[in-house]
Length: 157
Image (cartoon, rainbow, N blue to C red; front, side, top):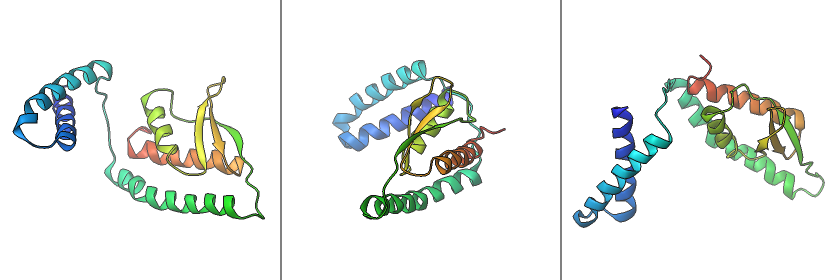
């Protein structure tokens, strides 16, 4: 817990310095704000074990910009081509990750990818995805991305 507190304190103090500047005058309030914020963050969100897999995480991070670019181009072409009509729809998708922080983190990550947008939970426990085209491919793509995400963060062990 002490390591988590030090990491959070360091990140919060770095954020303070980035926003307020590195002058000595602002450092004392920054240390106080970072300490109080660290205490609150540990109370509200206790540290959880994290088993990162560096190679899988690197693959996920390196794949993201290319995937976002190609998906963005596909969405733009779909939107701008008068011969093609977008077929937006809501698709239900059954995630493998159980409800909680891990699923929420994945859905936040998935919301950054163009073409699909997690839109909430369905009553049966599945997730509603707003997809621009291809209901089947949207669900399959979400499952593939979830598997990559789970591998990178050690959630599939």
